[in-house]
Length: 205
Picture 1: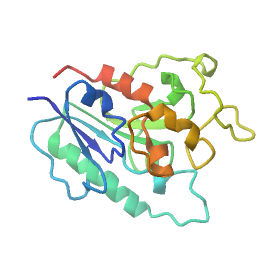
Picture 2 (picture 1 turned 45 degrees about the vertical axis):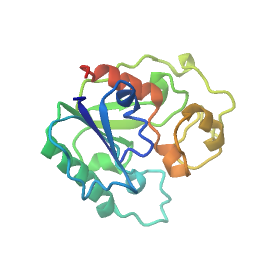
Picture 3 (picture 1 turned 90 degrees about the vertical axis):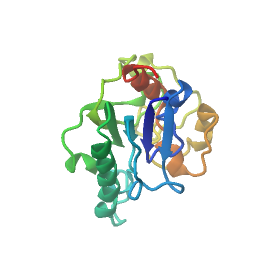
């Protein structure tokens, strides 16, 4: 049997795609079909990838909008509960830099998409038990650029951390994903990072 990978709150499944492509038994546990708060995991789970929604933790959230941190942590805690039940070989929780770092322990790993060859910015944190993916680009200047990406005034690099003009330009980067709204678009795991994470946390099936 193939080793089981749980992709919690995985949206399009972009983080677990390299595992699926390699023949792992990837199970996408994401709304609307599956809710991590009620999900009962199978036995013998090999790895868990968790990307709980960052909406309530985002520093980009309009300060005039009320946050519901309890609701945000309910999802995070549900992911942690599944991880505890499964005790997998590796596991990771991902979230952009935001308030979640004040509710969990010090992140194990920090990265920018461009450090893996994906030409945009979205500083992201990882918590968990995993082998660190190997960054391949040390300077933004050496990262392959995506022509035509919008850069906000006063910024030197494009970002997809919140709603703006890059949605349509990015669609071509993610062929095969059913992107239905901006939130799903922004939540996509950078493919270069996803592949590097797989390479560092793959013992074969």
